[in-house]
Length: 143
Image 1 (tube, rainbow, N blue to C red):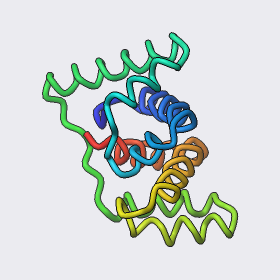
Image 2 (tube, helix red, strand yellow):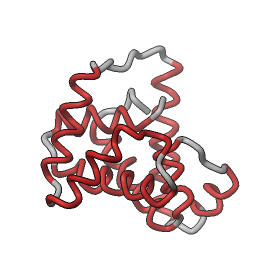
Image 3 (cartoon, helix red, strand yellow):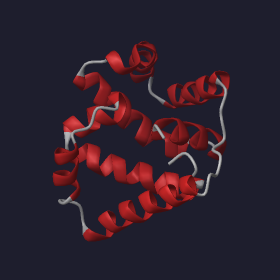
Image 4 (cartoon, helix red, strand yellow):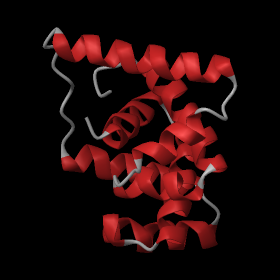
């Protein structure tokens, strides 16, 4: 997924937000990386056909790019941290406090906090400058 152009990453982010809104376990799993395949497929089957087609197209495109041995851009921890900071700066003061407190906890967050972090990122990323969008969306892909 990291190899996808920003337009596909934005679509992928939007699709994941739709899935996260339909299934709290998957929302949490998007943050922790622990996703039940059967639950994912069941939730996907409830999406409109056009959304399923988008997901398949984006996934296939990412797979072909990987097979062609394209290299993804590697971002330094400083650049990733700066992009997360941009997210925090877009939030209201209370949400910013929670975001900053939760971010270093990473995958150890409880289900509610993990889902909140994921949704907060997915909702906020589109409002960032494209360079920060790219950094964060690539960072959230996992592969």
